[in-house]
Image (tube, rainbow, N blue to C red; front, side, top):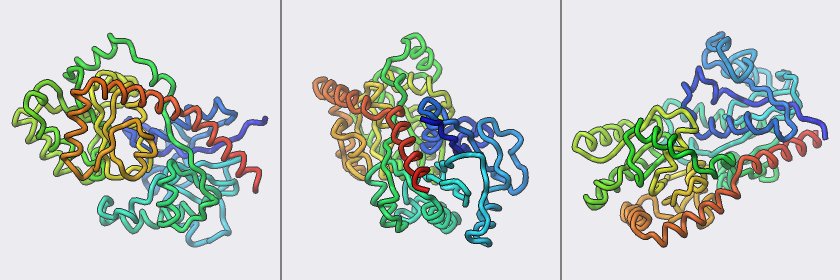
Length: 380
């Protein structure tokens, strides 16, 4: 079977733009960039400068620079509807970050959620309009859409009016290495670096309102004092939009002697695996997820999980986690205490999580993504 020349949007993984800190879209894009070549694809990255002029173009490491900025090409599309298309030497272009422009080749768009429309309170007021416009255009310029969960399909159909027949669900995953415990000496080194003691409660993700981290902190501080002394709360993630109140509470809690550690500079996946390896309970009661990759990372790492019973997360966990109402501190607290103290329940959740983690792999995701490419290429 002939190889496919794939153009892949790499703006969200360019080191000069991300400083090495990847959000969920960046992790997904990185997985495609790394994994597609083993499945019959010749991948070329393409990155947009964030500035109207040349900006960072000469310093891109993972992708070739697009001919113009995204804003300039979007304006071209707006002023010349249908008459001008970008021409890249690829068979299909896969946009993972909503930056969609008209092209001569088929375009696949991975649309992660519809947050600007469904939850405008989680988007900067001055960006809501443009984000809505960008995402709607992404949905309708693409020849086919990849959604990361069945939950996301419903959101995309209702919010953007996409024909469900143009959407394929491809779940995210983890690499096989996540199923193997790292060397203990390497784990110990990372724990010493950050002052971690085994058995901690762990959260991983960008600090932003929908991640519900403020409620995690408040719940942790409501645990019995001996539990707080024995188990740290470890928060891994960079500060995102709208987290000022959370950061203020975090700093105040730490000044007051709370056993909380915030790691905001972890950029190496290997060290992230070390942090997962020594966690006692993974706590992820997010208010909204189009998928929720950290849950699968915890499953694969052998860590029992507390997560939300809402949005895509029950679909991801498939019964392998303790599901809670993310708005209920009592439910979150109860689940944390159970997994910290009930050895039988811990073993059950760890086994179920490992089984679920083995089902959700990037290799499977690559196979399904390439099948979408071939189907779309064959239909045009």
